[in-house]
Image (cartoon, rainbow, N blue to C red; front, side, top):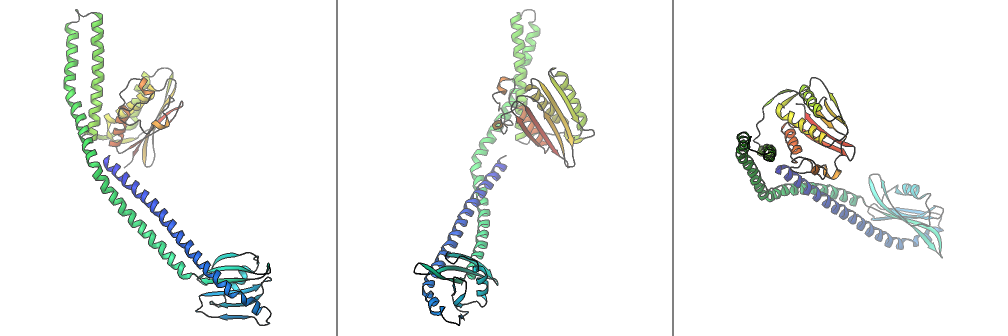
Length: 412
């Protein structure tokens, strides 16, 4: 139990760290990208103010000039409102044709920022109108290569992902170590509690047996001298002693389960026959208001402890009868390619959703259960038996419509 709790805590803290650290890195990454873009746009804005005069210088010339310099950091192209090329300086030959396709149908009066990829290069473009006397007379497209920044951010992402994975694993290991340290005093106290319950349950059996035997001797020897009230009192005391003995047996069983001291006599159980016989016994004691139905497949076998499996079915059927006033109880046994399933379904009062995760806890009893006899240990014992057979037990319930317990035993 503590090992599973330790693993769950370690996993929880590792996932929590991963989510928070990933969120931090995502915010940091996009902040850097935004800052870089803002800085580059400011540079393009400043560069555009220096180049707008070329529009007026080359507008009336018949020969349009496009110069090329591969070492240029910025490039620009100037166009009229009719998308006619006026002048430009470029650093990537042929890029103007691609840009003319992009901005051919654009609104020349609107400022726009775009990112494009061309011939495995990445570019940041700024489309800016040229205004004279409050009238748009043309536009200029400026840009620069951001390929190196793209590669930098790509490698940065890879590095951050790697760091996140490595740090998450380290945090998980550290959490596992710290959880183990924190659980040492808790486990020590829990082990002491388990030992006390085991020892107390074992030691109380002998005086309880003597007490019960004494009552029987008193009842026999003083049969003629006891008044009706005295006989009734002895009878009630014997009933309470029987209940106490049953409670001690359950506590001792659970204590042995906790300490892995439960001896199992494993054999091949004819499960179909066992379930059918157990169901038939319960059918005889069911009130007439309850209809009992079985769906038991033939020939199903299980390697396990016959006595404990029978007790498991007893607990679930007894639980179903206790909380069903009228309706139908169904006992099902099925087998598929990978598991054996036992289901006990009733039409009783149901269990509130907030209590479903608690009903297998020891001594836990819901408000409805407190109105009935019981110790609150039955379902805890049922779960222990299922776990000892490497199985799982599930419960589903709807208030006022009933409860279904499902047991799954894996096939080896």
